[in-house]
Image (cartoon, rainbow, N blue to C red; front, top):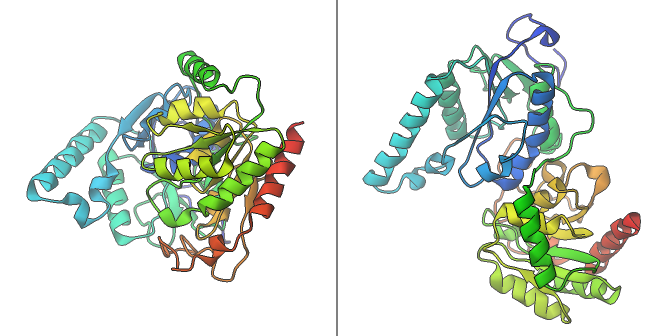
Length: 382
């Protein structure tokens, strides 16, 4: 078998495969779930009459609302089982296992034709969790990535490691074993009329109507604060864009209020902050009217791409080949090509979540390079 060639559980051709009830598993954070939306679209196009369900985390489930590629959204708090510490006290552990038992009963109540696991099997704990989930489905076909340990899959493609392919393309490979394809894959998020109307009203109240608006996101979510490029560099980029006639919008995620205010003050003028209480869906509705977003590797970056906004992604320790803005040709990644980078999710390992103490990959990245990348993408929109 050649590297990259699918391992099929039987000889049935994917073009002849008919599926009526399908489960897709993507228990992940905001950006990670969005990288799975092209695969969901491919499944919908291939199996137009199938019932497609998505098993996701509770905080990401709203991202799939209104998406016609999905018929049913199931939510499960995977974080309960990410580590022993997550189980906390005996009472918390009992509650967590109770929720897991309820999910298992729910999965067993269905007759699944196939399940698609859109996860890397990086750790022994992760493999055990996903093996248990797939066993609960009792699906005869189980598709996923194999790093040499996925004996519980019937159909697999080799996992060549983080960044060997973009995450979007890995998940398209997985569903591709069933004959599911999409011509021009892109991240998807479907907004309601109420959400766009709310955002338009917020836009007017904030004094942004009629302006060319560029968004900055100096935060990075809670997974790794080490992904943040220094706030003063964001302020320099914002000031340069403001000087060129753009209105600057600073995005503050939960807990990022002080950081956003520091950047806003550094920019000066009329920079506006999007408050952290804005839901991800409403934030996406606000961002959709921006000309550009400049931000760190985060869920906000992927939200922007999902609503068609060009992105300049600032990357340091994280793996840009795996999680850069997608599709790559529509966006720009700015990073230093250091021998030690990336150190978070390199190859088949988890790497260093907080990087090294100096974080040279970010602290020595000049604002002028990022500003020029922003100007380039803005010139494309003219």
